[in-house]
Image 1 (cartoon, helix red, strand yellow):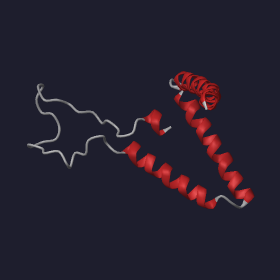
Image 2: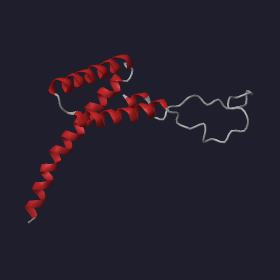
Image 3: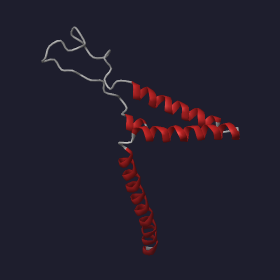
Length: 117
């Protein structure tokens, strides 16, 4: 009985180590790609075109593509939406700052560009 628990723990340890190493390497490459915005978007566009060509030539994966399209549309709406909805805020007069002491609130996205990518 004691040996059974030890075997399971020893089998999980290499998987956890591999997952940790993979996560660390993936994060390293994500951090390196952060300043290269144009290259990231071109790479994403290339992968999307390859996927669309694959769906067209295989004549399948329509339901998966439909779900993926809805997900990407949801991300796009989050990317284009402000973090704080101005209609829900109570405004006392003008919405733009009129004095130097008023606080200027720049457009802050609900979903940052890197998370949208």
